[in-house]
Length: 221
Image 1 (cartoon, helix red, strand yellow):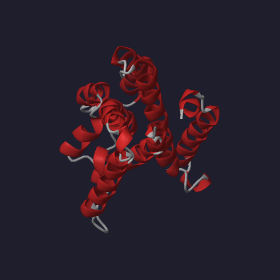
Image 2: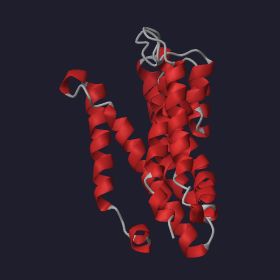
Image 3: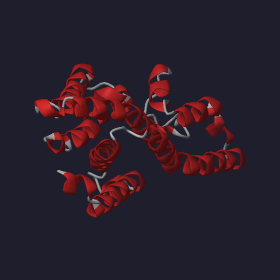
């Protein structure tokens, strides 16, 4: 177990990179890579696994989650790029098409707080609406990732506490199953699937929890 936790999964970085390339190709020209959107699922699954291993490593080495290091590390991965991206996009929108700046303040605030997907759901936005696109709607992905970063330490800590019961892996598995069930309940054939697309626990969360579940065997003594 210790060797598996200490090792670096270099190949997974490449998988995440390929997943992002697939997503970009899909959005640039859907016909070029029709299944490119599956890159989102791959990215979340790998991210869930890596975060789970990172937190487990902290528990094994120090007996704590070391949140004083975990939180800044996660923030450094996301916020510098956001602080560069947001003003650049707003400036380009102001110069080229000011209609893109409608409700821009709310979008920026919710993106930075990591809750854009919930804001979009509450305001009745449609991800697939081409007539009234939201400038930062693709950043729902970052919001979901931020929410997972917040919840993951709690789940891993609980798994660590009950590791000797051999039931630790059931926790993320139950969350993944619950997420899939919620998605099934909310889906309406022929309707707008935006709620499923943006809802943290009803859709994309299941893949992140599936990735965390992969580390469940590492908790076995």
